[in-house]
Image (tube, rainbow, N blue to C red; front, side, top):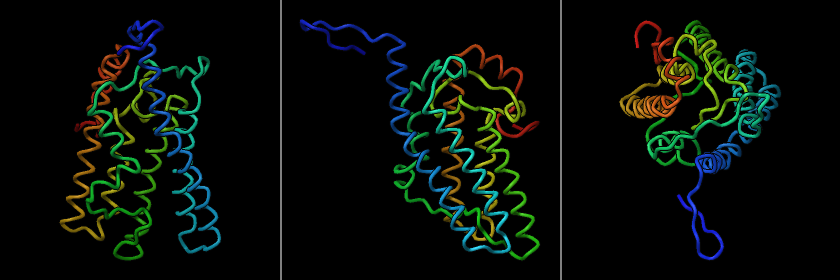
Length: 240
């Protein structure tokens, strides 16, 4: 990459300039989305509180977890401080890595036209199964949010801001992805059909590719290679 100088001269961008430019692109895309999500979850509190039902606690709990997750990522996109140890080391350099990440967020996640059957407010087959499955859904969402809390101010897509190895990253390398996709599959069970299964299969592949491209990117960092030696499992401890 080159930039123009006076007199028609050109110079090559430094690696630091390239990383800064890519991170600005990351911020430009993701920060408005995260701030909108934060606002949506805050307004959701008002809606469910004004229309309570017997699952009021569940609705508040789920929305609170999503609020924490998106708020953490918003802070991560907004601030980069030496004292927070969240300075950018590198940004995803490949088209595939950017493609599978952006594909999961608006407006791109609406382009694919695949059937969507997941819903964390799903009622199941009877009262008992609804309570049990919502407890499982809530537990998976706790893991998902805990992963964001573990990242703290280092949280942001497509970037390496330092390797995190504390729980739940001490168990698997992609706790957020496996818990999110697992939650989606569970909430789809009462309405599952061929179309919904194929659609969820599509998103499962997308998130699997996100994991692979992230590992390829982070693998350029010796700290991440050392982390992978300690945490062998990508998604499920003792299995894969």
